[in-house]
Image (cartoon, rainbow, N blue to C red; front, top):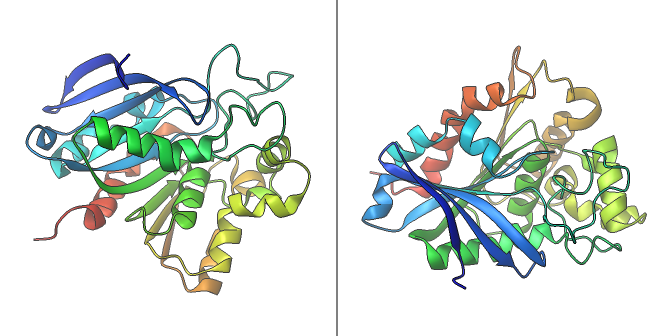
Length: 283
């Protein structure tokens, strides 16, 4: 079987919106992900923005709802959109079927606790396996940036901060900025990593940013009408951490916006152009 099985391929803004399946060694299951290749990919390898989605999402939410492909086609940036967790009948889920743990809620960590450790190695999948695969099989250059929403914003920030030199820039919409101090994060980190909170700190963007100055630019958008703002997201912790380490963080509070894809669609062009400044040759 080839490394990638193409599931769909549609023309969009002169480029191609595609979906693939493959056998993941990191996750020990069959995975699906989406890619938008801009028109420029027909002539040369192009840089990529990796998008990490939030709780309950798959790789298809961003493709269908964000409206990112028009600007990606103009700039010549590919979009790589993975799923949010391992999938399949053999993959363990939250025992009570809750939305915020298990399937659809991998939290982009490498799980160490049974029964999740055998499949929930999402950090390695996003940071290592998937880039190596798509850069070998598709017309993508090694230049990459990363972004995401909510749980995916958490994942994007953590991976970019930990993988120094592998990403040109990072951005996030309404990220879970301080998961060791919010209910979503505490539940996920306990379930995947165990009760020793010292192990959680490597997956908390605010902790990581406070430890060391970031080596790449960071853009974060947060709506002030977000229903999860105070209890779950805590952007003030990220801002405090960036100030203490002297990191380059632009945190924008957007009046009247909530946690939905309407928020993402409203500002995704800003984020793509932000990443374009670091991914593309400057004239």
